[in-house]
Image (cartoon, rainbow, N blue to C red):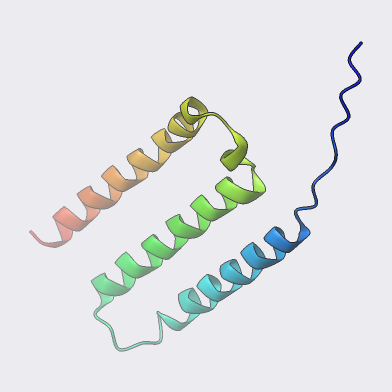
Length: 95
């Protein structure tokens, strides 16, 4: 048996910072609907913020940052599908 001792690294500070970043982004999301921005720009902003928050959650809370490059690529496949769908929606809006 090996005598490797793995010391536990506390992630508390990192998680608190990520929590405040997510809180700030959520507050931005709440401010967008009441703003005087055009409706399709509001939609783009809300979709962008939601996708950004999802990426932050996956990267930090689902420990994607500690995975291999291949696993990160696999995790990005659904994101590319969402970007493609958003592109189709925007293209249909401007027809």
